[in-house]
Amino acid sequence: MSLKTIEFKVENGVGWATLNRPEKINSINSVMLKELNTVLNRVEGDEGIRCLVLTGEGRGFCAGQDLNDRNVSAGAERVDLGKTVEEGYNPFMRRLYSLEVPTIAAVNGTAAGAGANIALACDIVVANKDAKFVQVYSNIGLIPDASGTFMLPRLIGMARAKALAFTAQPVLGSEAQDMGMIWKALPLDELIPFVTEMAENFAIKPTIGLAYTKKALHASFSNDLDTQLDLERDYMQKCGFSHDYQEGVKAFLEKRKAEFKGK
Image (cartoon, rainbow, N blue to C red; front, top):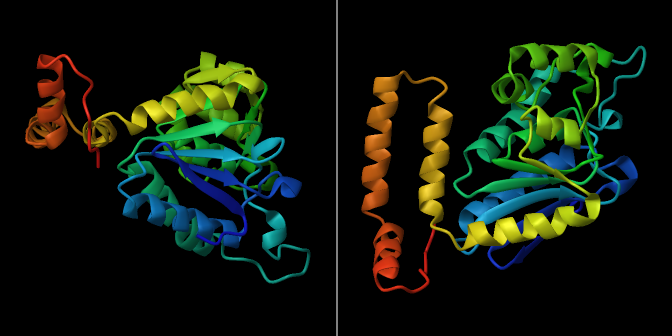
């Protein structure tokens, strides 16, 4: 792939997408949004990619929307932000949230606005303990987008979600771990080695089972118990007929390492 704002590589079954506009703290412009979708196209179309990691180049993960990418100067014609969200962020967020391989955000530094919410939409978030998560929208009269109003209350509860959205108060990685916003906070020099080990472990696991686990967990927010139990039955049936389940049981009985095919 020829990309201008993202570096993408595949190593040991893991796709690494590094946001690469360090001079702008990897803020998102229209080109980057298109290229993020290009990355998902590659992941979805390549059976050899069985985990996706998102991270940032330089001192930050992502500072959110690049305001210089929109003409919002005094006296200029007003931009239809609903249109830009519908055509830009929403398609990508839907795809990222439902991607059939595990997704990990390795948050190396500041994650603000849409940058924070893209990270939080990944399956697992591991951050530099000194990184900052900031819902900056209230400072300029906007609402959290990129699934922010969906993810935050589910991760940390409504009271904290409202407080962070209203105040734009930064949350350190270590604080985000304590409040359940993210999985783990680490010193910066431990971040990438930890994520690499986790991602490469996912890449050799039976990722079809992980995909159905993700779907079932997501559905649980809107299902009642009976509906969720029916869904578990259906997904268990699908997993039970898969090569990976048969291989896992066979390898266990034969006391050898399983060779899973994944997605």
